[in-house]
Image 1 (cartoon, rainbow, N blue to C red):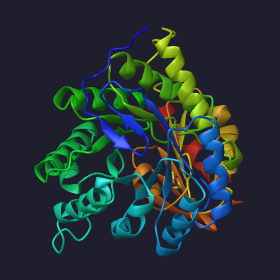
Image 2: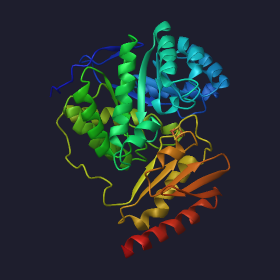
Image 3: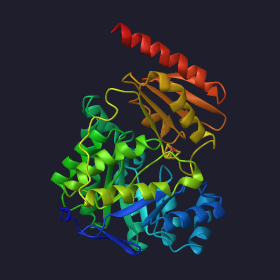
Image 4: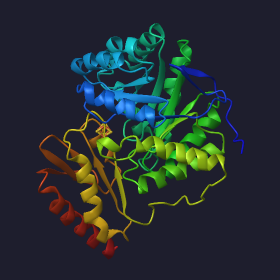
Length: 380
Ligand code: SF4
């Protein structure tokens, strides 16, 4: 079955071209410590063998940047580097990768001294000088703070969209058009809406699809499939990632899941369910990456799912995140949120921080909060 495709422009990423009707590229991200060169190279090879078109790696400091240079010597994979606050590392790593990904939400710190436009101009200049593409990666948990103030807190889509439009317009204005955009949320319904609205306004910009913090299989695959089926069937999407919480040796399963969804859509095997997680317990968890603060994270996410089984009839969202980079922001919309530090786990209920607890104490604390939330809900 020939799928419709939006008339996006072609963007070259190493030996892959996305957009302009090219096959939808499937990506994943390494979850090893980037500084552990052997483990990261091994994971890149496993991802390539599984059929990854592009592999993303997080680099947050000079040690990891030095490791990436060594990693490049051992692989020809199309590499994308994930930049967060330390965007200046772009200069060090760009000669060794094919794509730079930045998150607009991380470029608004110290706005007075250095406006975000200066930072984007800098990153785009580095990309252009080093034959790299870029991704403007907008996530629900981190956007321009001014946009959050402008909209009703219930409306998480408009701030994401406006942030994306601002960055696209700015990149266009400086003549850098070799980029794609992603707009991710953990709720597949929001992913559908935000990407539809973006594509309607800017149909020429290639889109990277993903449901962030989709969680563990099978739920994580089902949530992602719901969004991808709707969007890809409408011609939206040029590259994708299925983000799953998986232990390290199984990271390549993300690629198999992405390829499986694409094959099913191409063969017309499409479901129509779009209300996953709206009336039941919804566990969201990040796919983990080099930034994960304690290897126990994946076990913790699995233990949370097992321990909370008894509450599955309640419309409660619990978020489990691997680090402090995205943990505080990405747990904001959850009823209960956990994010990992090296020796303890932070717990919050709604917007209220409840403290930090050792790994062996967090489950009973979480259970007490969950019970009290259920009691509260049953009185409503
Ligand atoms: Fe990586 Fe942290 Fe995001 Fe998890 S929350 S994927 S550990 S950056």
